[in-house]
Image (tube, rainbow, N blue to C red; front, side):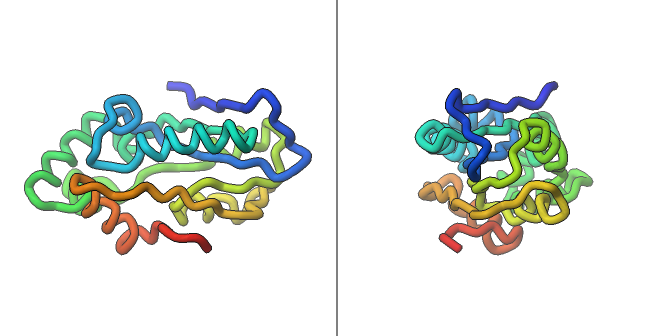
Length: 167
C-alpha cells in the first residue's frame, strides 16, 4: 500500500509550504462517515492546499494504524460505550499506532525545508522536532462537530491533546 503525495503544480519550495499529513480513513474519506472528522478534514485540506499551492501527504495507516478490520472492531466497542482510546486498547493496541517518519522522508525527498503544517494533532508537530524540516507555523483544521462525532472530538481534545484553536 504505497503512501501518496499530491503536489500543487505551482509548488514553490523556496518559501514555507502548506502541508497536510492525512492518514487514510476509508470510512470518513470515502464513505463520508459522521463518526469522525477525517473526511471533512481531507476535503477542506484539499481546498486550502489548492489555494496555497501546497502538498498533501496521504499516509496509508488506516484507523490510527490498526487497519480497517480492527477499526470496525473498535467501532463495535464504541457502540457499547467505550471512547476511541478505550476501544483501541481493548483490542490490544495503543491509542494511536501511527508513525509519521515516512511523511518526513517524502518532504525531505521533495527538498522541502520549511512548512506550515495543517493539523490539530500534537504528535504530528512532535514528529518534526529532530528533523531537517522546520514547522514555521501550525494551521488549525477545525471541523464543526455533529451529534455523531462530538464525543470523539472531545476525546481527541481532552485525552489526546489535539489543539482545536489557533495557537
